[in-house]
Amino acid sequence: MAMNRSEPDSCPGVLRLHQAADGPLARIRLPGGILRPDQLRVLAAAASELGDGALELTSRGNAQLRRIHDAEALAARLATADLLPSPTHERVRNIVASPLSGRVGGWADVRDLVPRLDEAILEAPALAGLPGRVLFTLDDGRGDVSGLGGDIGVHATDADEFALLLGGRDSGVRLRYGQAIPTLIAAAHTFQELRDDRWRLHEIPHAADRILAALGLEAVAEPLEIAVRQDNPIGWFTQDDDRIALGAGVRLGRLPAHTAEFLAAVERPVIITPWRGLVLPDLDEWAAEQVVRVLAPMGLIFDAESPWLLVTACAGRPGCAKSHTDVRSDAAAAIESGRVASRQHWSGCERRCGRPRGEVLDIVATPTGYRVDEEI
Image 1 (tube, rainbow, N blue to C red):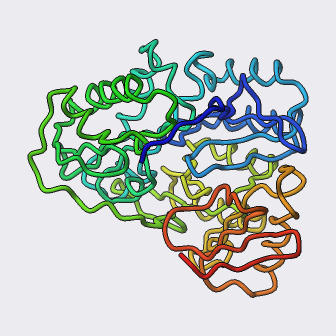
Image 2: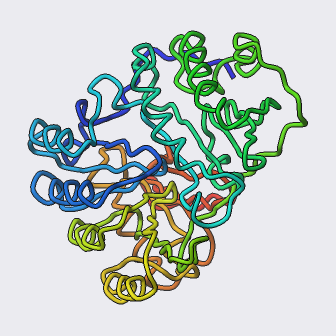
C-alpha cells in the first residue's frame, strides 16, 4: 500500500513531548520492555513528582507519563537511570521481544539480542532518522510478538535459526543467530533509504522484495504463517531453572506509581509486555507467594480469567481533546458490572487509537452515545 503524508512524524518521546489535552505526555522507550528495579523506582518517582501519579503501559512494551510539568527535570532523571541513552535515537528504540524468552518455553533465547540490537541502532547515525513508529520484533519461536505487525524482525524456527520478518510477514530468508542483528540493522538502513515520507515498512510498495534485493538475500524456505495471538502471560510460571515468573495484568494499562514502587522493592527485573501487563521473573516460591499476597489487593491481576484482561481502551477524556467521553471510566464501569464477556476495545472517537490487532469488538463513542461495531 503506497501512502504519502504531508504532516511530519509527531510520535512523542522524552525530549519531544506530546501536548495532550490534559497536559504534556512523555513516552519512554524500553527495549524488550525490560526495567531494572532502580529504573522502575525512577519512573515511579517521576510519575508521582512530575506527572499525574501513574505509568501508562503501551502496546509496544513502553511506558508513558502524563501531565508532565517539568520536562527538563524528567529528561535529567531518565538520563541518570540509563533510560535516555541517546538524544538523537530515543524515539526509534522500539523493540519488542518474547517476555518469557530464556525462562519458560520458546525455541531460542532472544534475551541477549535485545541489548545487542539496541546498541547497534544507537551506533548507526542514519537510523536516528527512522520514524518513531518503526517496530522491531524478536520472537523466540512461540509466536507471541511476531503477530504484532512489526516492521523488521526475526522469528526463531529452532535454537539457532531465525526467519527474517519484513512488514510483519516471513520473507522466507533464514538466518543463524550470529546473522540476526547485522541483518536487522542492514534492513533498517534500507527501509530508511526507501521510505521517503512513509512511517511503516508495509506502506512501501514491494518493500520486502526490494530490501532482500538490496541485501543480496534469497528466500530458501516456505514462509511461515504469522498469526495474531493474544499470549498475555498471566499467573504463575515455573521457569526452566525452577524459579518462578509471575505474569500480571494491569487494569487498562495504568500502573499507579505506588504499586510500581512495591514492584521495584522486590529487587527483580520487571518486563513490560506488549499487552499492557508485566512479568516479574526469577523469584523463589516464597517470594512469589508474597508478591501475589501484597500486589493482588493493590490491583495487579494474576487471574488469567479476569474480565479486566478482555478490555483495552484509548486515552479518552480528559487526556484526548478528540474523544467524546471518558471511555476508561465507562469501560471500567462495564467490567465491574459484569457486562464484559468478550474482547473489547473502547474508543473515544472514530480513530480507534490503541486498538489491538486480531478479533475484537469495537465500542466507539459518538456525539450521541456509544456504537457497538460487530465487525472484527
